[in-house]
Amino acid sequence: MDRLDIRTNQRVLDVGASEESTTLLARLVGRYGSVTAVDADTGHLTDTAVINVHQLDLNRDPVPGHAAGYDHILARWPHGTLRDPADLIEQMTTRLRPGGWLVLADITTTAPRIYRAPDDESATLIHTVLQQAHRALTGPHGATWTADPETLLFSHGMVQHCIHTTTETWTGADPGCRLLADVITHLRPRLNITNADADADRFADLMTDPRVLLGSYERRVIHARARR
Image (cartoon, rainbow, N blue to C red; front, top):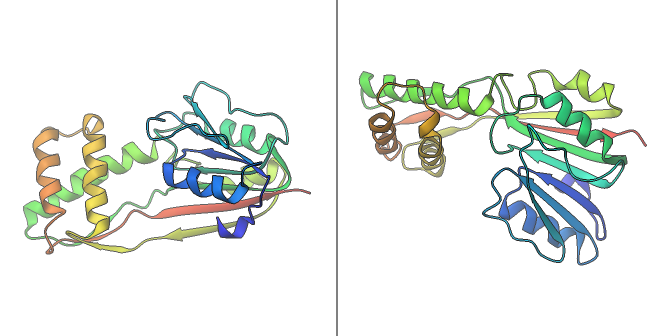
C-alpha cells in the first residue's frame, strides 16, 4: 500500500477486507476519510465512524459505491472464488476516480512445490492435499483475477500497471507451514479427497515437522492506475 500514496480525507474500497487492512487504511485516511470494507465473511470486521462494513456475495451483489467514487481500490484474496472476475474488475474500474490506483492480489496457477518430506508417503499426501487446496483457492479461471489481466485492465482505462509475483520456501513449524495448516482446516469441506478429515489432520501434523520443506504458493500483486 505504500506506493499508493493514500492520504487523509480520501475514500478507499477494500474488497476481501481483513481487520488488519481496514485498520491501517482507516489510520491513513483519517477521521474525515472513509474505508468501505467488503467481503462475504465480515465477522472479523467492525463498523466505525470511518469504516463501513458490507457483507456481500461478489458473485451476486454489486460493488458498493458510484462512478469515480473511490480514490483507491484494493481487492486482495476475496473470500471464495469468483464466477466472473472480468465483471467485478469492470465494476471496480468504473468506481475508481481518474488517476486512482487499483490493487489486485491472488494466487497464480503455479502450485506449491515439495522439496523435502519425511518419507515418500508423506510427500504424496502433502502433494495431494496442496493440489486440492490450490484448485479450491484459484477457482475455475486458474487465478482469482484471471490468468491474463493486463489486456482487461487496459480495455477499462487503466493506463499503466505493474505485476509482482512472489514465492518463498517454508519449513515445517515455521509461520508459512502453520498458515498452510490453517488454510487446509478452513478448506476441509471442499477438498475432493477420499479421507479428507484424516488426511487434513495428518497434513496439519506434517506442517509442524521441521523435515518438511516446501515452496509456497506463487502470490501475485497487480498495481494498475486509471487514466487521469
